[in-house]
Amino acid sequence: MLTGKRILLIIGGGIAAYKSLELSRLLRRRGASVRAILTKAGQEFVTPLSVGGLTHDKVYTDLFDLTAEADMGHIQLSRDADLLVVCPATADLMAKMAQGRADDLASTALLATDKPVMIVPAMNVRMWLHPATQRNLKQLQADGVTVVGPREGDMACGEFGPGRLVEPDEIVDAIEAQFSGHALLAGRKAVVTAGPTHEPIDPVRYIANRSSGKQGYAIAEALARLGAETHLVSGPTALPDPAGVQVTRIETAREMLAATEAALPADIAICCAAVADWRADTSTNSKLKKDGSGQIPPLGLVENPDILATISVAGPKRPRLVVGFAAETDDVIGYATAKRQRKGCDWIVANDVSPGTGIMGGDDNTVHLITAGDPEHWDPMPKAQVAMKLAERVADALTDKQ
Picture 1 (cartoon, rainbow, N blue to C red):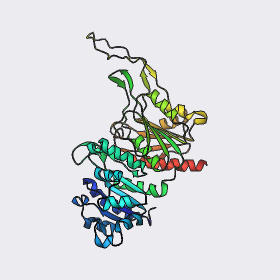
Picture 2 (cartoon, helix red, strand yellow):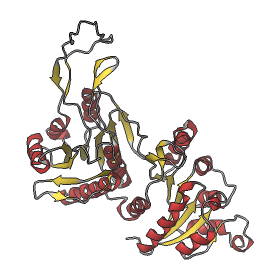
Picture 3 (cartoon, rainbow, N blue to C red):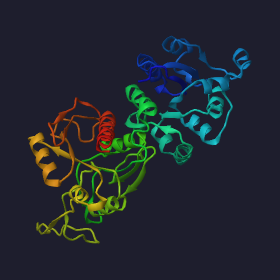
Picture 4 (cartoon, rainbow, N blue to C red):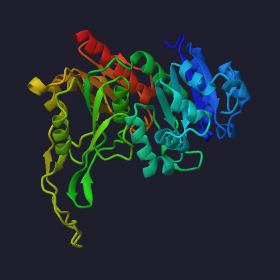
C-alpha cells in the first residue's frame, strides 16, 4: 500500500525518539522510502548513524549545510516527500509549528512544505495537558495537520497519563490511511458514544459502569482519520479529546441520549458507551447521612432510556449503519446475537469482559463482529487497531449499500 510513497520523517528530541527507528524499518518494509531530518535535540537520543542505517538514506541535521543549501535543501526536502511525519512531536516542535517559527532545519522544512503533515506527539503528561500545548494542538488541527495519539500509559519519567507515543505499527496504519483510506468516509457523518454514565444518588454518590472510554475514543479517532465528520458523545473519562473529533461531554444516560439525537441525522452511529441500565428514582440535593440506627435508606431504581434501541428505530433520522457493543461475561456470541435482534441495530461488536481478561480499562481487546451473517472472530489486538479495522469495515459496508 505504501509502495513508492516518500516519507520525510522528522525526529524530535524525546525519549520516544528510539521508536522512530522501528517506524523507519516498518515503513520501508511496506514499500515506502524514508528520508529523515534529525533535530539537534533528537541527536541526544538516537544517532544519525542508526537513523541512516534504517532509512538507507542520508540523514539531514543542519539548516546551514552548505552542500544541501546550495540547492535550497530545506525546500527540496519538504517538497520531494508525499507526507511529512513528525515523530516524536515534542511540545517544542508543536509550538514552533503552531507559531510558524523556522529557526532550524526541521521547523523550516515544515514551514516550507506544500505537502500533508502528520504529527505523533509524545511528552510528559503535564506538558501534554498544559493549556499552551492544548492551544497549539487546536491550532495545528485547524491548520489541517493530522494528529495521531498520544496514548495513555506509563511514562519514562515514572508518571502515568496521556502523552505516550503511539506504537510504530499503529503509526504505519495511520500513514496508510492518510494515503489510501483517508477519503473512504469523506462526506460521511458519524456519531459515537463512549465511556460510562454517572447516575446521581446524591451530590457525592452515583451509579456507574466500569468503562475507561478507550475503545470508543479510538473508534471516533479512526472514523475521523478516514475522513468522516465525527461527533463523539462522551461520558466522564480522563481521556483527552481525539484529534479531529467534535466532542460533547455529558454525565447521565438521559443527557447522552439527548446529545446523540441532537447529532442526527448521520450516516453512522456506533454506540460503544457503557450506559448505566438504571438510575435512582429520586436524587437528593443533600448528601445522605448515616444516623447510627443501622437503617439503610431505600434506593429505588428506574430504567434508563435505551440509546441503541432508540437510535435503531429513529425513523427518517436513523443512520444507515447502526453498531452496538455487547460487553458480556458468559455466552458472548449467544447474548450478542440476541441483543442485535432485540435492539434492531445492524451490527454488534461483542467482547468478553470477565475478570482476568483485562479488557475493561486495558489497552487491548478481543472482539467478535455479529452481523446478519456468520460471526467474525477477530484476533486479540490493541484497541486502536480494533477501531481502525471496524472503521474500514464500516466504510466497506456503506460502499456496498450505495
